[in-house]
Length: 239
Image (cartoon, rainbow, N blue to C red; front, side, top):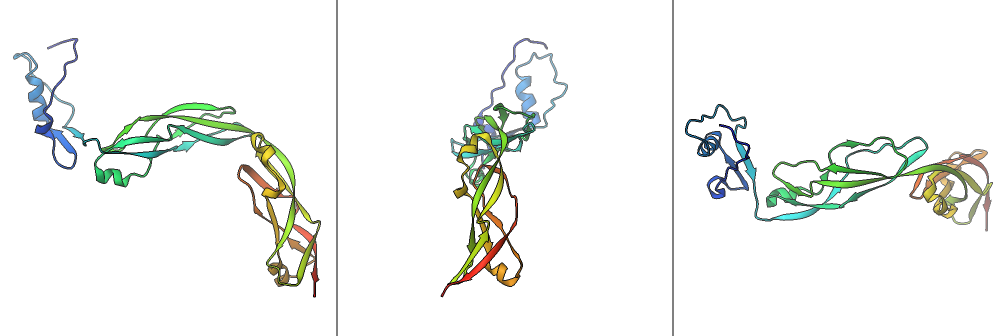
């Protein structure tokens, strides 16, 4: 038997659907359906599928966010500044108990080539058994920014000071070397950082110098390091 036309096998849903949103067609039943479409002299040698399984529901769905799974690699002296997924969420169809168990869906694992400019990729979503995902792929935008350095002078603040005591540091500011993308450079200001010395540590471990800790770094900074992590100090007592 030979035909250029692709013929369709029509199944009666009610005959093969079961409870819990699942159904199946056995190999014997599938061969019977196909045999009815062939010439009487034609015989079926083999059917590759052991059985035909399917899932269904009656339009039950919900929206869930999409999570990128993979690695985004930038060229030297660049860093990944942002990842945007379009759409940010997709619709999933499944039975109610399956829907309740899904909080997000993931892309297929994907590793980008090294890039230094905005990179656009269409990435399929990871399949989940018994779940239909619409759409089944998303548009991912990977943004790269050129790295640059900046020195920020941050005021040093003493913490855990008892009443009537004052701790002065020399110098009064800490020099912080910041590595940041050029796109964020203008937003990096001293007041967004916090450099501290702890009076309790000074009192418990007296020394000629006290340790400076960089306790707050703003979002967007790739790396921040103190040029000096200890400074001279003076403790004053006020009546």
